[in-house]
Length: 153
Picture (cartoon, rainbow, N blue to C red):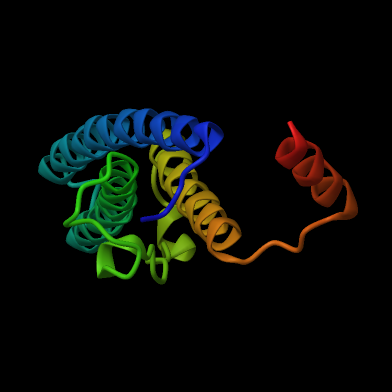
């Protein structure tokens, strides 16, 4: 079983809250943009390609966020000692990102672009965190001394 530090537990919890809030924001912003697109289409100002592009980027963003949330929930299960959640499970790996098409996204409202960018940054942060946790760290001389002191006490 993997040992998790208290700071790792706190990081998981904080990232989980952030991801859930961002997912809620994304849902609301994409819904508002879709509704606005329908109104504009009915008035002859929006084309179908823009609505399809919005749907595709909405799906990409939602997929990205749900992947992050699934990773965080798996880490929570690992921390809790769930025997069904191991470090070698497919859910234990964040995997490759689903990139937004920024040429398309430039046509969206700024609130939608902000959410898409925030979801990409959050994915990058989780991937970096996973990499940092999974990469064996070299023991520094200070850590060696602290370990010796701890062993003597």
